[in-house]
Length: 443
Ligand code: NDP
Image 1 (tube, rainbow, N blue to C red):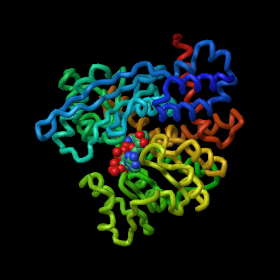
Image 2 (image 1 turned 90 degrees about the horizontal axis):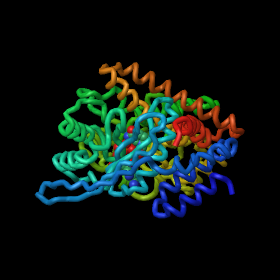
Image 3 (image 1 turned 135 degrees about the horizontal axis):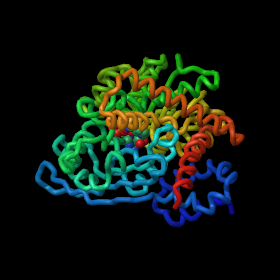
């Protein structure tokens, strides 16, 4: 049995209750096979894959907090410090009722390769809680964030582990957590990224994942003789990633026709009105169904997916496994030419395979959504030198990083005889650097 199959079999036995982690591990390990086989003896001897798939540390803690009625609520908090062989652990915090240890492990595992791909010195980690921010008052959000940080602060630090935002954790939550960290430690340092601009945040961090997604998509399209200009784009989600992906797509001359949230999706044939989306989601924190009040000609759906829409480029930017095999078939039938993941693992394994087999250009999230963590690392650099860079400077660096990521993954895929397989290219390019660092540093 091959080394990859052996390790995968062990993981399946040990972590049967963590399907998302197993899905991420299978996707990565399967596509690493050519690189592993070329060095099988060396990697086996140091149990490289066993070490790579087992986090350095998994912290699980109770988060008790007081709601507005004076009732104590209890949630579970997680921080998985997966791998720090190339830099301090780095990865977001997710607040969503669906969060389990398995979710955090899948995200932390993916983060190792994504962070490596950026070319910046950051290791992989992820955290979060099963807390549901929906319907909570501002006061309750603050109480929860403070309670969460009251335990997390013991395990993080600017040279050790630097969390950021993810689903359910934006600027407001980072602010409350930063305030609590400062209070508990009496230190003012770059322990979190995604901070507000008045207290150490970086320009472009808010836009970074969405903008970076478009920089990479455009580079991938150009490398294959296409151009984003004039294309019709379907986007899912209406959160941070989706909003700024839509903004950059429009700036680049594309027409975005869909966006979605967890209750439904909108189709606007004339092109999405982003000012309306920002007001609904960022100001009112309301449901997307409100969109038709701003744009009466748009259609709001509660059934089906945005992927049934005819588009040239599809950008899944909401959550994991939101683009399945049926969706992939519909995209292909409708003449879509490219799919680039804004979210983490939004495409199921079967759907990815189908898209690739049918000649669709496919950019995996660990490459295409790496702009967020890349600018987070730039925020860390600015915090360390106690300086702030201009918007143009950060944006230029972001674009350079995304172009580099694409070039690296395209050449890794080619090197192993799988030209155009960007999933394989991204995994191999991310893996090689981490593997070398792990071996160099001993067990
Ligand atoms: P947000 O919380 O800002 O937005 C998430 C969006 O997805 C919302 O519109 C939300 O709808 C929707 N959504 C969430 N869960 C579901 C679900 N189960 N079904 C349908 N829709 C859903 O998160 P982000 O934009 O920050 O993150 C989106 C994705 O991008 C995640 O996979 C995240 O891990 C990934 N990512 C984020 C980065 C960042 O910098 N923020 C960096 C790299 C990756 P609703 O409003 O109804 O909840």
